[in-house]
Structure formats: structure tokens, C-alpha cells
Amino acid sequence: MPARFRRIGFSAYPAAGIAALVVMAACSHQTSPASDAPGAASPALANVISAPPAETTGGFDGARAYKHVERLVAIGPHPAGTDGIHRAQAYITEQLKSFGCPVEEQDFHASTPIGDVAMKNILVKSPSENQNIILYASHYDTKRIDNFVGADDAGSSTGVLLEFARIVCARKNAVTIWLAFLDGEEAFNMQWVDPDNTYGSRQLAASLALSGTLRHAKAMILVDMVGPANPVFKRESNSTPWLTEILWSTAARLGYGKVFVNETSSVDDDHFPFLARDVPAADIIDLEVPYWHTTNDTLDKIDPRTLAITGHVLIASLPELEKKSR
Ligand code: 1BN
Ligand code: ZN
Image 1 (tube, helix red, strand yellow):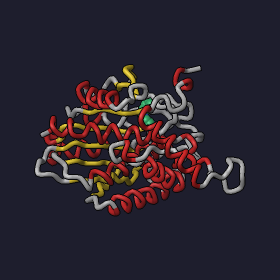
Image 2 (cartoon, rainbow, N blue to C red):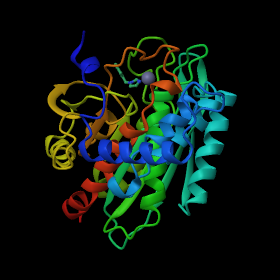
Image 3 (cartoon, protein in one colour):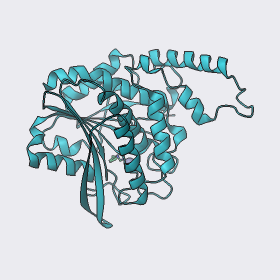
Image 4 (cartoon, rainbow, N blue to C red):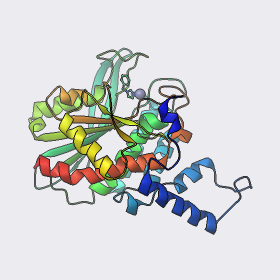
């Protein structure tokens, strides 16, 4: 059995796990339907209840992030160029506006194996007196597989980025913070063969280079597949070492050393177009899940605690990144 399936329970999340147990105990005290009784909490509700309180995760609310994943999954499959992705775009944009975020849409056309496809990156540019940029990104399209809803890929990272947006857009930032919800990460063909992938991130990086804005981009942090119950985030070996170090050492400081582990893996993803243009970039991803690119990538695979851990690390590492980016 792979090591990841042995790492279960709360042991990987010291502070968050204890807090979650306290919340679960409090909730069961108040409502306490027997788990098999009519009206008992559904598995989805049980998951929401098990999110650690936001006070323990730097203000990042894993339950809110989980709710976003639930809504994105309810939209159904949303590959690039489909009706589904229009519904996902409407949801993301509506949520960002409700947080008071300034939202921009980057519409473009991509030449793909199925022809010309209209795509849209959704951008938030959270201002600062300092024009240097830290860019956070997630793709929001799902893989073109029948009945594939992509709870983890890419509902989890989209949910995390939305909850992160709620915090960032209400915060006084020391540098400019951009959030990019990227279209067209997934290959149209079953196999990942260049250039049939990362359409949105390539478009964004190219447009920043063209406008001269790219020189202000000091760091790019990608989140992708950050929802499993027993997460293992390995240091992505193509990523910029100092940026990976800030994220992983922050995680260790917070007690998440068993989640952000000191092993390496290699993944070609939306951070590549930025690395190729000399923007420091890193990828937080757990690709070693058994349901990857299968119809088993469903909501029950998502653990709000993992969303909260990821968000906590993003929030807690931000001041150090800001200092480095000024
Ligand atoms: C991540 C999620 N990716 C696709 N969906 C990127 C990837 C590329 C993963 C190549 C494995 C191999
Ligand atoms: Zn994928």
C-alpha cells in the first residue's frame, strides 16, 4: 500500500486537527443526530463541519473554500469551450465581485486539436502603492472526459483561490497581488502533449510580456489538486528553489511538515510559461491520487482541512513574499 494511504486521520494536521475535533464535538453536542438516524449529517455536511476554524488557519475558512468546490462540482463538467465553463465563469466572477475584488476578464481564442476555442482567464488585480506583483493562479477548466466533474482537479484549487481572494481583496497589500483563474489548462487530447495544454497560462504570460508588465511579476504561485484527505505536497523540481523554500518552510513552521514533505516530484503545469519567461514560480500539487483524470474525482474526495492547510500556507507566507518582492 502506498505510504500516502497510511497517513490518515488528524495526525498530519496538529493544530487544525485538534481544533476540528473541538468543533465537531461542539456541533454534535448541539445537534447530535445519530449518524444512522434520519436527518443525520450527510457526508458532505460532515466535511463542512470538520473544517478547522478560520482563527486557527490565518483567517482562511476551509468551510467556505469547500462550499465553492461543492458549487463548482454542482455545475457539472466544465471543459474549455463548453456551456459548463460559462456557468463556472459566472460563478467565479459573481463570487469575486461579492468580495469587492476588482475583476477583469481576459478573452482569447486558442487553436486546439478540436479547432478554435474561445477561452477566458479571470483576473483579480488587488492594488498596492507598490507595483511589483505576486501572482497566484489556479486553472478552473475540467478535463474533457464524459461525466468528469473534477472536484479535486480543479475544483479544489479554484475553491482555495476564491477563499484566498476574499481575504486578499479586504487586505492592505504591501505589493500588488494578482489572482488568475486560468482557462484551458487541460489537454483536449487524452495525452498531455505540447502545445495541447496550459492555453490560459501561456496567454497570460505572453500578454504580460507584451505589455511590459512581466518585469513587475516577482513570484507566481500555482495551486492545483489541493483537496485530498491525505495530502502529500512534494517540492516540484522545476519550480524556483527559493520560492518553494518559502512555501515549504512556512508549512513546516505551521506544523504541516507531513503534508508539505521534503521529497521532490516533477510536473509540467501552468507555472511553466512563467518559468520560461524567468518569473520565479512554484507549484503546490498532489498528483498521486488514485482518482486523477477519472470520473471518481468527486466531491467526497475533498477534505476541507486540506483546503484550509493550503490556504493557511498561502496566507502565512505572504508577508515574507511581500518583503522579498518590494
Ligand atoms: C495537473 C492537473 N495537470 C493536469 N491536470 C498537469 C499534468 C501534466 C499532470 C502532465 C501530469 C502530467
Ligand atoms: Zn487535470
